[in-house]
Length: 424
Ligand code: SR1
Ligand code: MG
Figure 1 (cartoon, rainbow, N blue to C red):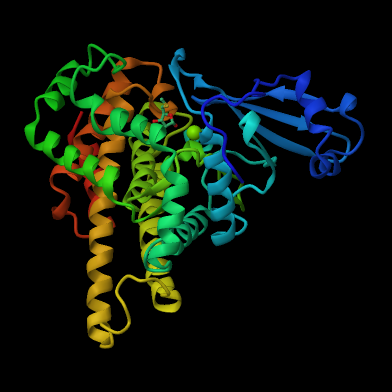
Figure 2: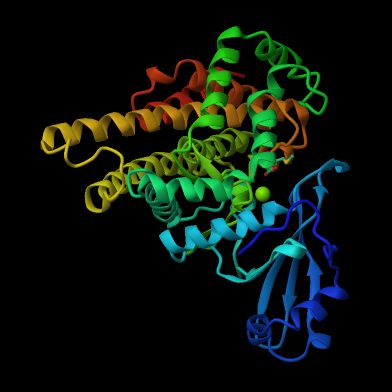
C-alpha cells in the first residue's frame, strides 16, 4: 500500500453522520454490519490522547473505526501530528497478527487518505488498566502477553530475518520518526528538566521532582537509554505497550494501538509492560479501602510480573532454538552447543537489563511528565497519591541507575515490596 504524505487531499475527519455513508461503500464492512447504512448506529468513544475512535453497530455485527487527527487530541491543534501513524498502526497490526495470531484485533479495512482503519470490535473486552484499577485479575494474561512479546519481537529481529528483508521493513517504519520524537522528548528528556508541559502532584512531590532534575547519574543513565532508543533497530516494537494498549476478558487478551511502532530496542516493549504493572502495584495503596483491601491484588500483580518475564524468556529462547533463520549469530560460527547456550544467555541478560532500564524511565515519565496514568491519577487525595508516586520514583531510579544489581525478575518484585514497606 502506498502512503500519502502530510495531509492528503481528500482527508477529512468523519463524524457520526458521514461515517456510515463512507463505510457503506466497503463490501467487507457491509458484510460484517449487515442491513443498510441508514440503520447503523455510531458512537465516538475515543478517550486516548491522539485519535477519534468510533463504534459502529449494524443488525449483524459491529466494527471499531479509528481515525487519526492531524493534531494531538490531548493538547489541541497547537501540537500537529502526522496522519501516517494510522498507516503505521495498520502495518504493525498486520505483522503482529501474522506472528501472534489471535492476540491483536483483525483488520477489516485500511484507508490511508482518510488515515482511517476499520477493525474488529473487541467485545466484551475492557482496557486492562481500567480492570486493574478495579482490582480484577486476569488468569490468562501472563501466558498471552508473554507469547505476544516473544513472537512479535523474535520474528522481526535479526535472529529470524535476513539483513536485507529486515532493512526493507525498517525503511517502511522509519516514517514514524515524529512519533518516535514524542517518545524521545516525553520519556527520555522532559522529566529531567523544567519542560513546559511537565506536571506532578504538587507541592507534595516538589522535592522528589527537583531531586530527579539534579541527579547526574540518572541523567547519564536515561540519556544513554535515549541513544539506544534512537539507534538500535533490534526488532519491530509496539512502541507503547502499556496496560492502556491491552484489552482483556477473563480468557482473552488483545494488544491494540501500535501507532508508535518502529524498529527499536526490544526492551522498550518488555520494559513498558513491566513499568505499568509496577505502577499499578504501587497505586493500589491509594485505591484500598476497608471494604476493598488490595493486598492480595498487589500480590497477584507482582506474581504476574514475575510470570510474564519468565515465560517471555523461555518462549523467546525456545523460538531461537527452533526458528533461527536470520543473519545474526550464524550457524557456521555457532556449531558448539556450549557456545550457543553462552551467547543466548548473554543476549537474554542484556535484554533483561534493557527491560529494567526502560521500565524505570517509563515509570518516571508517568509521574513527572506530560501524560500520566489513571492508575495514579484516579487517586483523589493528593497526599495518598504522592505516597504511591514517591515509591514508584524510588524504585524507578534504582532500576535505571543500579540496573546490574537486579539479577532476576524476582529481585525486582522483591525490591518493589521492600520499597512499599520502607518509603512513605
Ligand atoms: C503526546 S502523546 C502522550 C502519550 O500518549 C501515548 O499513549 C504515548 O504513551 C505518548 O507518549
Ligand atoms: Mg495509544
